[in-house]
Length: 102
Image 1 (tube, rainbow, N blue to C red):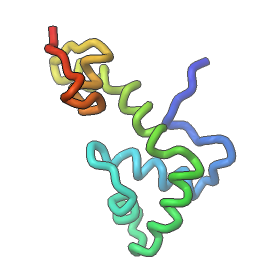
Image 2 (cartoon, rainbow, N blue to C red):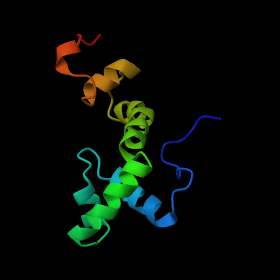
Image 3 (cartoon, rainbow, N blue to C red):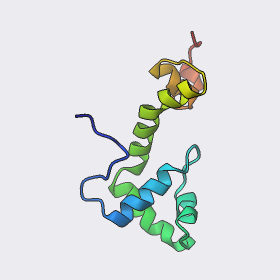
Image 4 (spheres, rainbow, N blue to C red):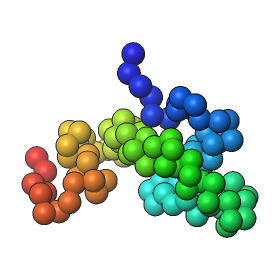
């Protein structure tokens, strides 16, 4: 069975996972500061988020989540792109290696 990047990471506490879920919902400009704000926590709480983000691979999981769900979002918006083109569309492949869309 394929890994779902939105699922709880092995060893991740419920509190850390809740914070990750808020971070995930900060798309498209995810920041720990925004996740902290959405959680209703003071700015000092960002230190805990930074530790959890590093320990539980938040950035990588969020990117995997976006790739996994990107095609669905693009399809809903009436755009039909191949996976590599979707990466260009959401900005994960720099313009220097960009190629024309079909």
